[in-house]
Length: 485
Image (cartoon, rainbow, N blue to C red; front, top):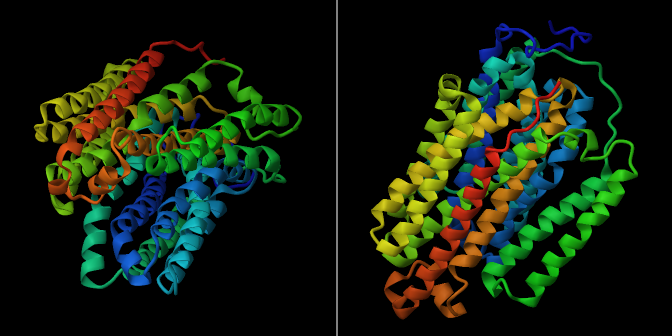
C-alpha cells in the first residue's frame, strides 16, 4: 500500500485504510502542539516583556510574527506538499518545530523569540498543508468528516489547555519551559509518525513549481491588511496611514489577478474556481468563521476592562467558546450524517449567528453571564460548521490537489480570523479618546468612569458587525452549487 506507484488513497474505498486511526492520532497530536504553542505563549507575553524589558512594539511582534508568516506561506507550502512526499514534509516540519522550540528556550532577547515564532509559523504552514491531505489519503469520503472533526478539535483543546498550562508553567518554573516543554511532545509525535505514516500512499514525486510572484503579492495583500487594521486599534480606523495601507492592498488585488493569468502554475489555480462549489464554500466559511477569535478576545477584554474581573476569572468566563468548539467539532460528522450535511451546514451557521446576536443583546443588558452562554453557543455552531465545511471542500477535490486546496482553505480562514481580531479590537475602542482606550485595555475598570458608554457603543457596533457578517454567511450556505462531475 505504501508503494510509490499507488496514488489511489483511501478516498475511493468504503472503509478507512488499516492503520488510519493511528495516522489520525499523529495528525491530532501535531495540531494540538501548534495550538498549545500559540495559546501558552499569549498568556506569557507579560512575563517575556518584563524579563527582557521589551517595548510594546517588540511584544506585539512576538504575538503576530507566527500568524503573518504562517498565512503568507500556506499556499507555497501546499504546492510543495503536492509535489513531494507528504509524509516526509509533515515529519520534517514536525522535527523543525521541535528544534525551534528547544532553541527558543535559550533565546537571549525578545527579538530572538519573535524570530523563532516566525520560523515556527513556516513549519506550521507545512504541517497544515499536509495534514488534511494525509487524512484524505487514508479515510474515504464518508469517514473523512469524522476524522476532520477530531483533527480540528486539536485546535480547540489547545485553546482550552493553553492558557491554564501556560499560566502554571510561567508561575512555577519560568517562561523558558513553555518552549522546552513542547520538545518531548513534538519528538513523541515524530517517532509515532515514523511508524504510523507508513500506510499513507505515496504518489510520484515531481519538481515543485512554486508561484513566487503570486505568493509574494498575496502575502503582501494579506499581511498588509491585517497590519493596517491592527494599527487602526491604536490610532483609529479613520487614520490616514490605516486608510492608505488598506488602499494599497486593494490596488494590489488586480495586479495579482494579472500576474496569475500569465503563469503556467499560478498559486490560485483558475480551474479550482471554475465552478461555484469551491468559491462558495470559501466565502461562507470566511464569513461565518471570521468573527470568532475577535469576539472571544474582546469578550475577555470586556470582563477585565469594564466588569473588573481579574485575568483568571475572565479566562474562565470565555472558556465556554473552546469547549463548545471542541464538542461541535467532534459531533459535527454524526449530526451531519443523521440530518444531512448540507442542512446542518446552514443550521450550524445559524446557531453560531444566534450566539453572536446574544452577545449583542448582553451588551445592552450588561448582565455579563449571558455572554458566557453566548460564547459557548458561538463555539458549538462554529465547531459543527467548520467540520462539515472543511470535509465538503476536501472530498470534492482531486487527491493530487488536496495540499494546495487545503492551504487555500486554511489561508482564507486564517486571514478571516486575523481580520476579525483586528477589526474587533479597533471597533471596541473606536468611540472613545485614546486615554480612555488605554485605561480600558489595561483592565482598570474602576478608572473607566464616563468612558464606559463609549466602550459599550463600540461593543454594540463590533458585535452587530460580526452578527451581520455571520448572517450573510448563513444565507450564502443556502445557495446550492452545481454538482461536480
